[in-house]
Image 1 (tube, rainbow, N blue to C red):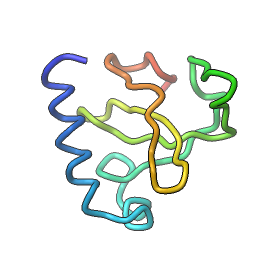
Image 2 (cartoon, helix red, strand yellow):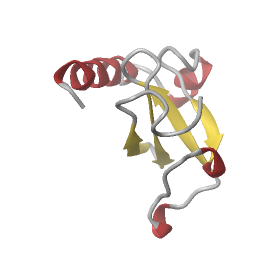
Image 3 (spheres, one colour):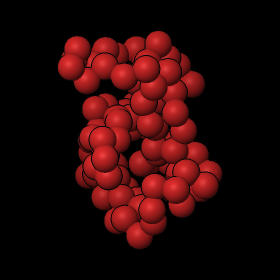
Image 4 (cartoon, rainbow, N blue to C red):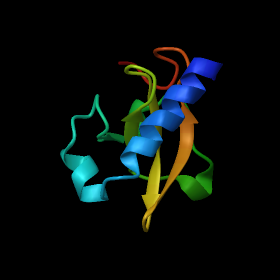
Length: 90
């Protein structure tokens, strides 16, 4: 990621830290919220031990997504899109 993208990523995560997972689910997907996308939508493959049926997708810089999964109260980032369309077809 370039410097601006890193900054946007961290700024949005700092904002998200003030919400519960339930509250984040209620936010718009192109805001601080997220959407769930099936594994087959992604153009990249996760390592076998991290395979899930669906992944949580948040936005960081504008509508650029990053995806991962939640285990307990922790979110694990697997992929961060830096160029529109690299992670999945929009």
